[in-house]
Image (cartoon, rainbow, N blue to C red):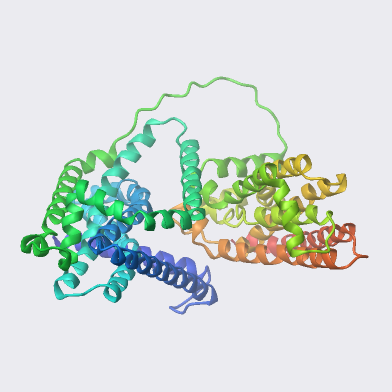
Length: 549
């Protein structure tokens, strides 16, 4: 490996870490100290990693015990190999496209006296390190569980360590080549943004289905573990030999017992060599290829004078819809609202029967408040406005140089939240009115209260982003997913949205004289006051902050 490759890897990793820390520390942070936001983000990451590893250890222990009972312990590491490979591949196959082929500095590096293969290998090493983290979130707990359940030996430990580095290598090669074909396919599709959003939501739906039915899947797998072992032994010989090598006491053959890992090592080496050779020879062509696109024919149309506020709103909506990553990360709660409406349409009677379990003395009027509060909480998770100011980037001066009242800009950005959430709100309101025995007033409030809650979260996102903007990003996804503005907006909107419904639902359920009208009144007044405070902040301090950006 050349020194140039190592230097490029170092630059890539230090750049990513520096960028992440910069976003976590905030706009005005100085020195190397971390603030509360940094500690919060690091804490969340550590908790997520710990939960993933504990969950993996628990599942590995359960499955390993079942394999031990069924006398097929050799299947333990092959299943871990496949599971961690699939998990890592799903997590990095789309990242491979941006890591290798769509990096913004590809053309800059290729214009320097640096071999294209060195640029490619440095990116693949960075991708390998990412895969190493993904893989071993599952594989390390699996190894610990194996040591507690099975007979352990030095050769098993050596093969375990070898597998820790082998699996990410295989996944890196596969994700690199699949990422290349995904990128080629995306460029051939005219409306690739729409397709990306559809594929993204389908993937999320499949993952949600697997999570919901995870218990049933594991139960079936445990009951059929002997059939899985038999099928693996008959059809997947490489994994079978790998399993015998990592659990030697299941094999009486010396060669298979010690050297059964060599075939899978050879296959991995062949795949890595073939992928690296092909990509290194065609890397320059891949990253500089321009896909032929049909030229748009200009059609002369009369210009129309439009309202300034309406134009600003159209700009925000258009920018939101033009970025699949923005839609999937910030607009997911709209899908949740649709799912709520669909569940009411299909299983509305279950909701009516379920409510008295928690509130035995509650009247049926509480159903409308419960649905409205759930819908409001769902919609306020649409953090579409939290990154809107940061997304202006270094071109924000264009917007500031226009003779516009900043409040018009703030309104346009804040109204994006209810506009994104309205389809789900309308759908759930209609299904509730059709399926449930609700009064007309309940139907009105199921529609009205979530809209107020969306206005609150929309203006909250603008207020927080004014205080915590970031303009030195190189990729929009950074401010959409990783900025402090988004995190604080989600936490604050969830907390403040839950308060009025707790104050309204509990008295409605247990106090005879507390009608649902009072409950609705509490929610309306509460959100109206919050929106009023946000508008006051934007009209005073918000304008000053805007001028200083």
